[in-house]
Length: 348
Image (tube, rainbow, N blue to C red; front, side, top):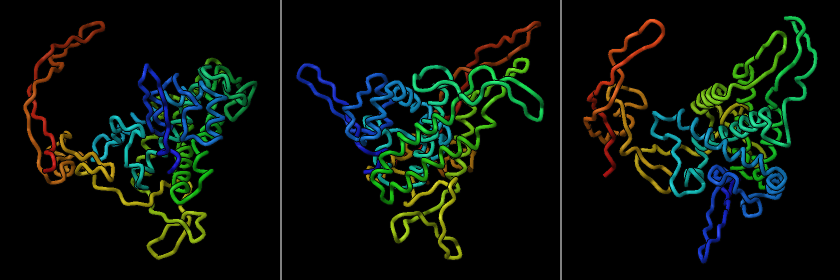
């Protein structure tokens, strides 16, 4: 099994009841401070050692899982596949992970970037014993704008990237196969995207001539998600070369070449995600809301896969008749509106 879909077992004994679950390291988001490294059989020795040495880092990573899942769901909120997690499935994404599709490529990339983002912020906030501010951003410096002093606490992205690389990639490096090569490539691509968007989502916070770099948490996550979403659209199909040691892509002219380091790669075509299919991990689009006036991915004809949709009239509250009062407040009334909500019919 590949690294992120491997088993993660957490056993709790109460009276005569023992609960054991299988999951990926992503499942740490539900464990929080209860993470017990010795009871995670899916981890390789390097991951287990890091877990024992840095329990607070593991807790930070577990908390950060929720953030990158939320960003993934934002990026695909209007598409048939909406980065849905599967209730009661502790791999979080179910059997979807068994395929090397574009969607799985996106999951690996954004999770890898998410670990770096989470740890960089935790370092600068002083939440981790193993790191702190970026030690290179200290003392007096000079650039084209003149002299300045580093001040405050700059996010330590390089440290976060080193730890993320060591922990997230460990299983894939230990058991290299075709899927492992693909997963490693997408993990690295995710981290590269975070670094490439590093300048913009960071803000120079200037007080007199005291300067420090701090990642804007929401901006960094959104810009990284936006860029990975674009790379998802341009992902390239790959295969393993004849030696089983590298990925190759076939061009339109029939030439084989290595995929770009910043590209997302996949080996299997995606399911259409129209209907529930346990084997492919598709939950279908039955019951999903759609936009009857849109011709895009959120349009009823696309989202509902030609099955049609149901219309329901619902009443909702909205602000209306808003007026500005000097100075300085806006007063509105609460109005009731009746709107039509369309939802895709279930597959029959």
